[in-house]
Length: 188
Image 1 (cartoon, rainbow, N blue to C red):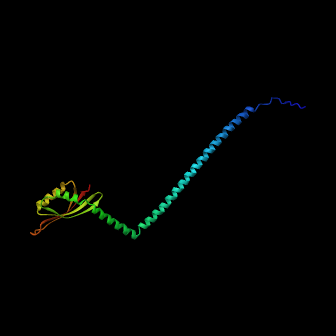
Image 2: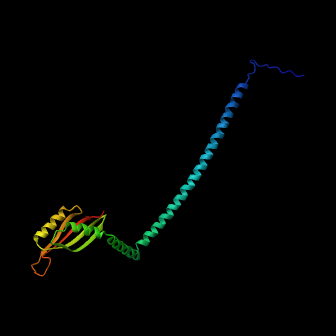
Image 3: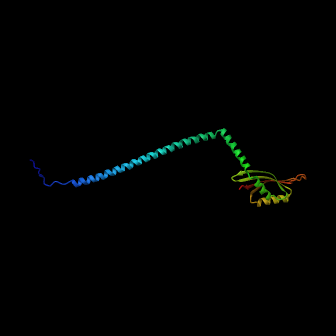
């Protein structure tokens, strides 16, 4: 039979509370590590998907930029420039065709005094307004002055600019005075 005797001077220390606390703290640390590892993994996966989306959109942007450059090169060729000029001309013709001729003649009828007639009219559309070049014939100076005063007072015709004023003394001519002027006409 063997006897175990403690021959040391101090009694043996009980380390069980320390070990229990260390195990408890280690367990909490392990659980925290697992939770943090899981959240880091989920974040990494989300960033990976986000980076894949970004690279997809960047590649689409690059292909669109290449298409745009190819189109710019195409539209700067002489053939394309000719087509663009032709389409601009056709669009201007369509714009002139959609000009409200009836309305402008009704407004001119209200503005023209007796003894004045319109010889020619040509509009140019610009930003919802029309710059109208008028050639007008008048019988005498009084009719001419009445016409110019009526144009200045008109609310539909603005910015009158007289280009030329010529008179003839021919007895056969119906218009003894010819005026050329430009005015702005509001299309609305």
